[in-house]
Image 1 (cartoon, rainbow, N blue to C red):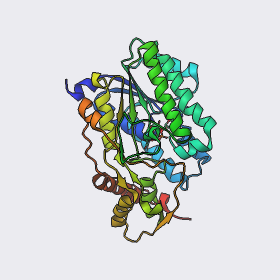
Image 2: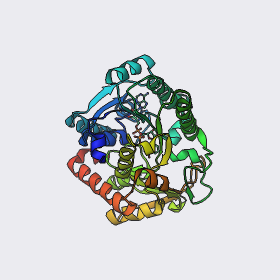
Image 3: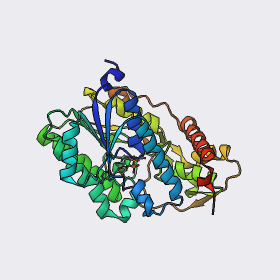
Image 4: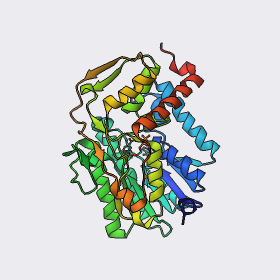
Length: 349
Ligand SMILES: NC(=O)c1ccc[n+]([C@@H]2O[C@H](COP(=O)([O-])OP(=O)(O)OC[C@H]3O[C@@H](n4cnc5c(N)ncnc54)[C@H](O)[C@@H]3O)[C@@H](O)[C@H]2O)c1
């Protein structure tokens, strides 16, 4: 059966689906004929956290406008967005019972390593409690075919060689990585005890349209658009497996209802690291006047590199095609157009 036929008509629920990855995934799956539902509390790295700017982002109006753009696209695609905090066990169980999904994709979390280290309590709640609640509903569903959990490359901790694969020993560093690794173990535990079919995804260093997470790719473009300098750690020598959102969305889609993906862990990245300095070179091509400064790196940020994606290539036919030199300019051009269409958002005070 073709990928499109497998996806068409599937009932898929995305918990934390109004975030950066979730809304892009929802739009794609919907375009392929899936019945997509989003459940999201909108209060972590989303619309409600921006009202009082609790994360102290530098341009809250811009971030809000990007989130509004997500919700506009979701609405135009007739995707149902249910605003619900997944920490509420009874409410989330009731909603899942009503939707009765075949596939659950669990994305809800505090998705930032540094914010997680600053606030472990709420990170535990939004990342671990939400997962436990969903798993507990999932274990007794007779309709559920697969539970897809979003982990992270942070489970590996410092890379001891220039690449890691799924067999590499995990030694997470800090709260975010530890919770992700613990979450993976809980998901596997539910499989061992209740036969819950799962797939665990380890993405890394994503970039793409309507991200508000203030990762390096977004910060560079926004600073350039605001005429500010860009700052890199240790002269941009750090290598990351930068991954354009389209590759990840393609990879997840290939996991859905694929028996080769059941009870497996996959790295889903571009599969080849580039340095932050490489990213800065692309920005300089688009904004020749930009100034760049170097600072010391955060010691709690693991040294990373390439995530080997051979397992995903072999088992699910994953074939990432968006190198940084191809994907980043597409994102820059999209952002430039957004700035042109919304000039007031980019005015400095
Ligand atoms: N973006 C990346 O580079 C990256 C890399 C590795 C792993 N991940 C993981 O992928 C997942 C999605 O990441 P993202 O970049 O889309 O993050 P995001 O912050 O944009 O989205 C997370 C969403 O979860 C929702 N959420 C949080 N707590 C909730 C709760 N209690 N109830 C309901 N909804 C809740 C938020 O409102 C938000 O919309 C996260 O688990 C993240 O840790 C992301």
